[in-house]
Length: 272
Image (cartoon, rainbow, N blue to C red; front, side, top):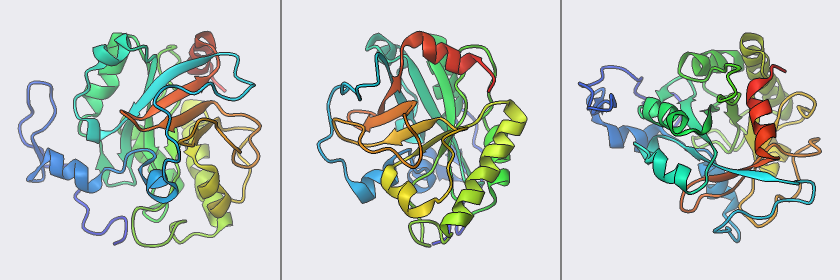
């Protein structure tokens, strides 16, 4: 199956429920639509790499981290999220899936993105990349059109680009060479930066990156590394440190920011 084959475009929504989430999309019940077309952040990394010894509580991080901030990420799979509950548990930031390829947008995006903000979290949006579907620039613009923007309000994180194993036919690297994948990521990144003044954070695993990418983004793009273990491990080339770490998917995707809370606010506030 190719990325675009058989995919329903977001449209033909049924009347919305009380929280403005549609009941059906193109005649398909919303839960079936999400299950078929939504690939959550880290889902393909866990499928291929496994979870090793997944920690149940936030790990200490590497020795360079003087302080960390707990956070989480969600997609359409979580549906309407009880943000007050997560806020009371100490989560201070959230990333919400906005889009995938050029064929899917999260039908729960408004509830998740606005709800996290309303309880006090610093929030951001992410895009699941499907490089075989369309160009990097095309997907960056699709992301920006569907919630992936940034504003210097101190409460909005720069958009994140989710680069991981191909969930469709076409091979681990979506049929692209390392140089072509590097060019695709640069196309997305340059387009996003040109329109927002922020470089998108790149989410990936060291294993996938080593197989599929030959370029160096360490001087521009913040790194969000995925590793489901008690330590962050070796980072992708040539990052000397990480900004976010997704360390667990139990009981929800859990992340840490590598720094104190005031640095997270700066990250959400300043133009690059």
